[in-house]
Image (cartoon, rainbow, N blue to C red; front, side, top):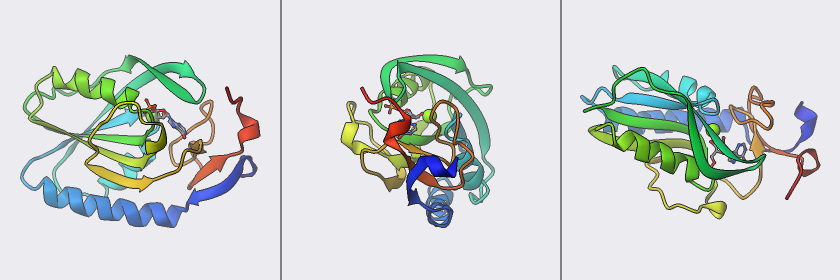
Length: 180
Ligand code: IMP
Ligand code: MG
């Protein structure tokens, strides 16, 4: 599995340091707000787990799973909710935890959808931001790393459901996926 990666973009240690920094900011910003963190499955799983353990607040966690139609490496914007939240978000300070924002289509759909449910606020925390392919402009509140236009895997991110358990973020060898 490690051999399918051509380059380690972010080491586990770099991710740990950045996650701690984001957690400190979130702890300060959400004092007395009892935030509801919404993890977008499955990619946000590792990030959520490491992030929340360093946020020193009485927070709640919920999950949403979405599938974005498209080809293997690009989303179309047609999003389907595979698993919805358990918690009611009305009046809550919602913090969406994502693995990566690429075109922005998936996140845009999620934000529009959550807005209709009457939260007190919605903010975004993403481990990775890939601005090169952005189609929809979405304000990001907490960003771990800005990365170049490469297809990456590991630390939650997959290709064909594999590689999520790599403890770093790496560039997948392009010969392993069909480019359009
Ligand atoms: P968007 O709708 O184009 O912003 O795509 C968001 C989703 O596409 C992410 O939540 C990922 O699941 C997936 N994605 C985008 N870029 C990558 C990548 O480089 N590696 C793995 N998954 C990606
Ligand atoms: Mg994802």
